[in-house]
Image 1 (tube, helix red, strand yellow):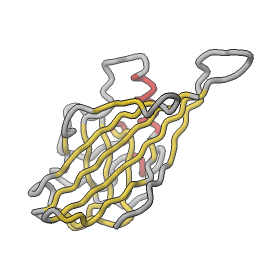
Image 2: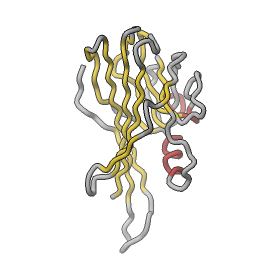
Image 3: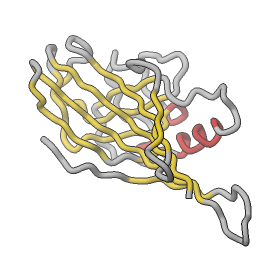
Length: 187
């Protein structure tokens, strides 16, 4: 399944300085890319709409002045289909899949999107063959939980959550890769 790349953007308006009465704006866009493979064959490959939670907004804003804040430590999978939400029930992982807590594949990468286009940070987690065999994977959450534990990702630990357009049947020989991109755009 291949869908066109779609985005939901979260934006933050901040008064960074005043120049002739103008406000500077800081925007935040978050994209999620899901690739499900079986025996080297791609079964699902899609970009997803994403919603940064209120807690995610807070964590990202806090990081602007505190380098010690953990932004992302890993991701977790679930079977819940509740719509993603800024706060409340859809802001944390709804139905956690035991053993799906996965540390980042490597340190996050960051790069410019080009002059005047902003900056992108990318996080990747891969559940390799043998990890998390489940026929009804429906959600993924990106978490700042330290240490990454085999428990649900509560609202307090969730930066963003994504609900798949259809469930993924991850069998023992399958891999599932989730790439999360956070774009910061000054205006």
